[in-house]
Length: 354
Image 1 (cartoon, rainbow, N blue to C red):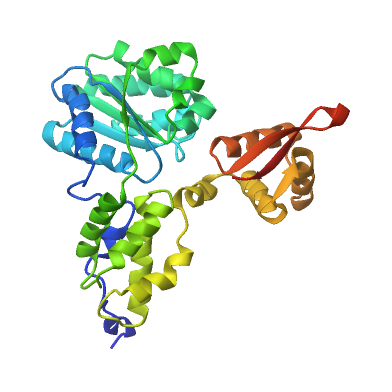
Image 2: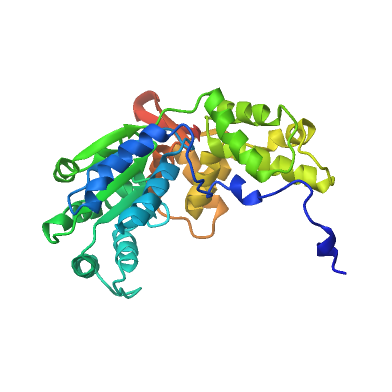
């Protein structure tokens, strides 16, 4: 007999529901936001222009889940094509346009194709489909930082096709569009939906529902403790889900029949805010090197930071390119910079972890 056949879980019924990627059948405490977004996109199902919409609020409070939920319902109800794009994963204009074109079943070669050609293929695909199209650009600030011109291109598609095309934007930052060029900003025509953080009772409701689906038995007080940890770490639901998942695996190691408070207390110190961890995984190698240096040195003048960096790699990038990396880390709130006056040399920047 295989050793694996003896390892059936005594704790989990359905571990999948504790994944941050899991999309439930209902979204507790986001009913209002779901209805508002659905109203904005419904015209696309009727052959009319949908309302471009901007969702903003702190990390882990249901913005992405709301969009994916409404997109799923919209496709099932009407056949409108929806395309979700996270701008961390698709960082260039070509990548974004190619992703949408491929979702619209337009053939695009992986290399050697210019942006204008990809856009042309996308427009042709929209004409052939004769269906509405709604695109979500999640973490749109990454696209604005790098290639905001593609936003203008997407907003102009409606000039070339009869079927309606709408865009949903998501960001943690309410002021993200302040950095757009005026011609793009004037074309946005967005309605805003602000997502407020979950309070303690709302967080407890959400995690209790997931716990009921995930575990065979849960001691009273476990969900309350996980909810408290999530609220105290930025109100991010993903923190609460990670608490439950890690506690479940801790209980599983001991062949327990019930998820208990002692299991949760053991893993709590290991569960940190999720957003910084995700961002650190996504940044480039130079930016990771900067973060590593700052974890060791705490705070440095910008010139000192570049010197330390240059000593740690075989082929350091230029100081100008390095400053761009520092600027990007500051823009996504992984580091902070403070200007200090220093004698006749003028201003110098002190850089530290956020």
